[in-house]
Length: 217
Image 1 (spheres, helix red, strand yellow):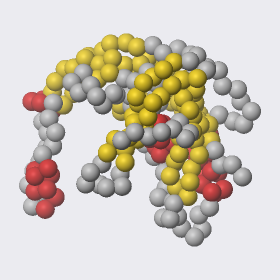
Image 2: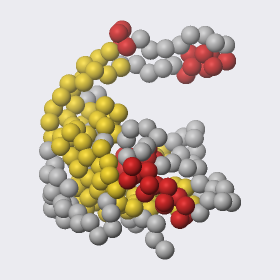
Image 3: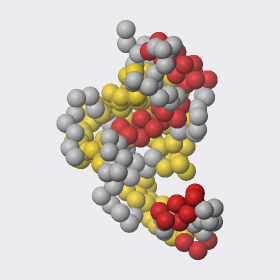
Image 4: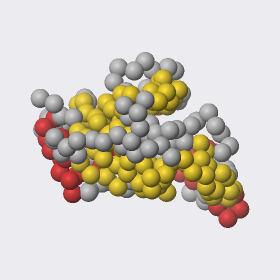
């Protein structure tokens, strides 16, 4: 029995940042698999399952726009965080002093349909089963419930979502397009050495198919 889902996500703006461009943010042409996984986990996450993205449908034409955004220009120091946790020493970032204005090339007026399925993990309880998890996700998605607001790459770009019911058609806004190298996800097997994973992405009739892709590390 299949426990796949289809979820529509849309928003006024989106930014799925290319990691190779460090100073100014530039978005990929469409949603990445890791961003799609993040949307699903915002709606329903459980240690007993892991989400696997199958396809991403691009339902509107790809349009870019340029904006200027305020960003914090520093990172919290590891030593300061450790002292705050162990000694109670105050630690923080003062945005009034460290704010920077940067340009960003972002997407506008986006709509995607995420096709995905989940797999059970060894952290599932004895009472957990795929049917239970599938029913919990579909119920939450139909009601618009989420653990935190899903977003489209950056938290300031919230995503509206709804469940695509069985038999509902999906319209695509683009055709074929070569997207080049795209971030697939992060490899967390070694938490001391987290590695990015990439793949060669391409849209075929407006669909980014990420099943059985060759992952490049």
